[in-house]
Image 1 (cartoon, rainbow, N blue to C red):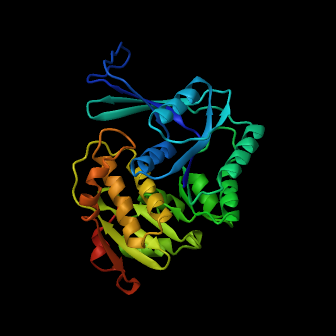
Image 2 (cartoon, rainbow, N blue to C red):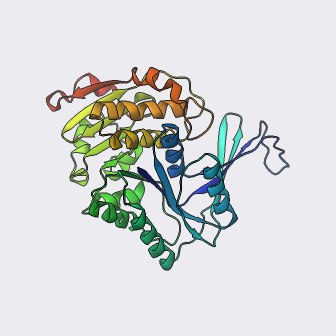
Image 3 (tube, one colour):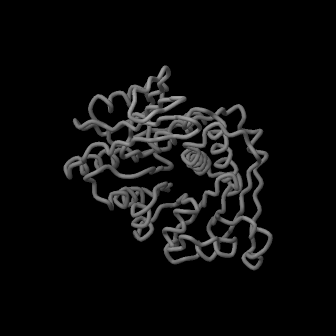
Length: 326
């Protein structure tokens, strides 16, 4: 089973407004309200891949009950720690090809609630094959809290796929019990290694991923958007290319990629098949209007179009220098 962790879930509200006007009344005929948060996007894609999963995190109030009801309606198993304080709304206004977001911060977690969730998390780990941890932490919770989850998983020898950024990710990389896999994009990778403003060729990427900060992280998947990914898997380096695809909504594609990685790792697939699975779920999400959604019937077609090339270190400055961050 895969356990997905979303510490600050939300009700995601989408308002499509063709002519959005400031300081005026804007009427919206169609509204979408769904259980949101990066980890719940991961959960939906894992469910659509027909895999056993359990979603957990902290929810509260009326909005928390709505989130759980939404998961029930789609038959996604969950076990949240419930508090009285309200979970958050995240509003997206879609207008003229743009997306304006209004994101609430959510509840402030007390020390007692933090400890209680940690106990809940510990109780859920029996029978779990893979844990995914996605997104940021809610207010009030210890900034090092993800490290505590890593400790719990380390005790049970469960691999953790950590998809976070900033201080949360950096603290985890400096922790003795490290995640099995991380998935930074190019900008996040630059922030971690103080490379902001620099272009990164293949030579640079290999050198960056050999930085002591990434020591003992078995798998690092660097997201590169339409250019696929650059991957360090143990001592091997891969450039992963994806085919051109029709883009409907790229939001949540990174979460779909994590879902694919979790499913493949659970089944002990080879590194190449794992990366193909992850790129395929990411692509399939991009092709759908809904966030955290894939059409599994298209999986094999796009899986077979993912191309992976292993890069020998001695050839690190070769033709792949064309894959450069702007």
